[in-house]
Image (cartoon, rainbow, N blue to C red):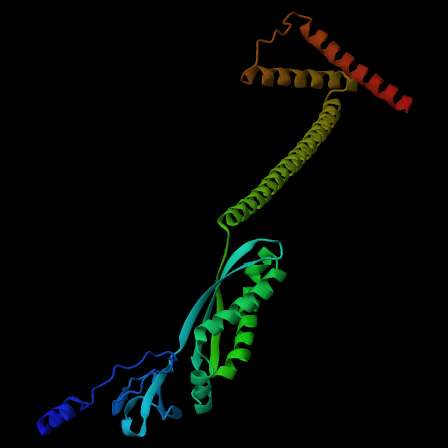
Length: 325
């Protein structure tokens, strides 16, 4: 009997072993008391030690004693690292378009003892709590905004979500570092329609720009043609004025040297000279047809008479026009 009693005592003896660190998020209460006598807390983690089911202390990173005979055990652990949570929220805009908005939130636990106590004992699941607040804020904000304005006001949406989370999560021992709207994804058909509208608008602007450019080219060409004609007319007028001045000087010098000839004879001779110069220019130009010129003894007189008759008819027409006014 004594031998059996000793064997029973040997088999019931507990050998202390190292316990694997608990998850870095807030954990649930264990169902049974642990019998380990020490714990090693990893960096970036704080463990919660209870005594007789009541909070005892927070164990910082390092090695700590846990006394099973005083009913001490490890209730769970908290992470002191910055944590990230991405939440996809499907909601409707003011113009009845469904969009999926991705909200990314970075948060961490406050290092004050009272705040860590609240984070462990007041809140069961911090991620679900943050997700619920994000859903509430996004679905109450976006329905007041048109689809086009959602893309331009995403910073305002992120700020509103952050303000709500800070106000709510501080009570549970968490601080919100940053909240970002990382993606706004409408339905594929809506996105395709928006791209087509944008392409049509850009095509219309391009057509207007091309039409304006063509208009400018036509106007500039007309202005250039008018300027060219004006300059050509000015040149012809100056040329004729120079011819008249030259003829006048020629008549004066001719009469000064020869006294038995009249001004009319001199003008006829000068006109015949101009006539032959003109015919020579026409004959030497490229692309002209054959021109028949009278060559008889009276051809010069006939040409002079024709030129004189043309000048007289022109003078009579000018006089009639002035008289009609």
